[in-house]
Image (tube, rainbow, N blue to C red; front, side, top):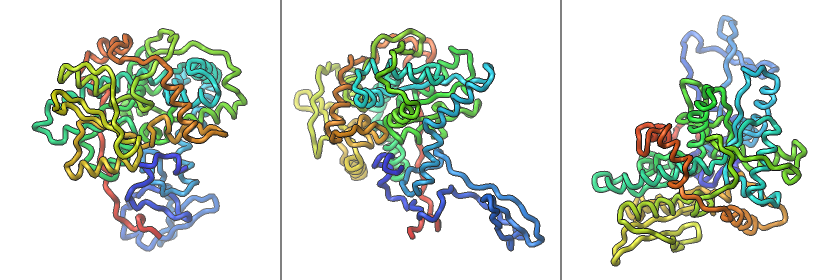
Length: 475
């Protein structure tokens, strides 16, 4: 399972290796009691543990458990332990919830919502040899046949991520003189990159990272917030599943920052990868191409007749959208086309805005662990020339995520090119012109740049301290 997390998560300096004979557990604080100093541990045949005191009294001990919330994706766990972690968010969990719904009374059932990423849809379309719209409609038919109530497209939530990122960059640009950590602003949509930054560079890198939530987590806020209100349901009565191209998204959904303490529910309850959707189809004995199409759902209840994408590549187009907006907002320059200049490799490119020989804006994209490390070293040496960097853990970005379907009989390069062609075949959407997005900003979020928008659409990050204990010794 380790190989399915992004390379940036696996290749770190943390000594988290756990030998095959050990179990993956999180540290547990032990209360020392002198009276029980000579106690011994007895293991029962069923695997339960008992602490036996000097007087013969036996006390059952609670086992330490690890969840995705505790996981650092360090690739140190043994395969069986990682399997347990990933099973906590898998298509099997979705099937359990759907089965419980069918057996429960109407007032006890949960409203099941699935939000599908455009990258996952492109991978499924390539595998099933279907068009993107056809794939979306047939997938909706399949999911609703299982008992899912609503199927949404996360392209909608990406509009909010792009708009908030644009505005955040302009705010940072204006305050760069008094705040040295304002720029460069680093993208925050990739959980592999975020987890790596928190673990290895902590307080140094975190101030540079955009606070805007990823499209997955914006969708979580919209589903458990706006949509729940429209359905007259509390957030905990909705079970929200996302379909993503990436295993790291499971870790992102498990972050404490995305947990509603009042209702004891997560914004995204379960994340399944594109490959898991294919596995679910196979387990149900269903071929996507044999299904009839179904109308596409939208957050505002209107039937969608077409799909759209965001220009700027398969990772969401953050660089291009922010670059165009900043050029217009800060310098009054309308950028018609973006010209990339490759540097070390195709996954490290830069874009520059110049006027009369003066560099006004310098942006870059850095994909893959090697390029991320180079970027971090530039920052540490104070020699990073960029105002903004679109950072993604996977080489070639999200379309090449570890959770995508690997096509049989094709090289990885041909496979990726096929998925890219499908993804880029859709009409490009301009976030500012999306009427549904404008309505939610105006009527639910309280307008552009409002306190509520900042609360709902932004988050924070936390440096992870390296633990020094006997458990970190490599045997």
